[in-house]
Amino acid sequence: MNFEQTTNERVMKCELTHSIADVDKFIMGMEELLAKKEYFGVAIIKDEVAVAPDEESAAYKKLVAWLDENRPRMNKYCVGLSQVTPKEAETTISRELYGCDGLAVMNEEDAVAWLQKQGRETEQSLRTLNNQWLLYAFNYGWF
Image (cartoon, rainbow, N blue to C red; front, top):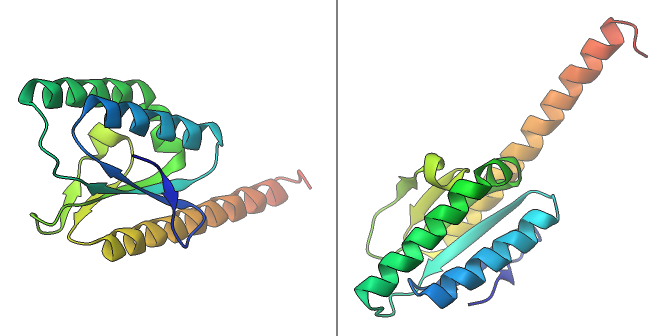
């Protein structure tokens, strides 16, 4: 399992199984992305490799524990996580679990397109907030 850059420099993709080894690699990749302190999105392509139920359960618990610990950083820098799951129709993914918006989609192209849209909306929100702050500062004579 490796993180790969898509055509958008801030959107990464990775294949993920339910194994402990893959969850460890996923966590390491997320740590690297978060350490950059820049906005990013991740498209997760779920690989349906069979994993023993006890390993799958342990891997899920490990991922959830990491997400709980890192929710503030995820909320700050992750514009979204999209999961490609061919078995399901488009559904939202819990913001409470991941600390950022999420969406499950049927194919990789939709996953990347949604993440690009999330990134554009985040950039627009930041510009709006920055402009509001500058207007406020100007009105109060700070400039």
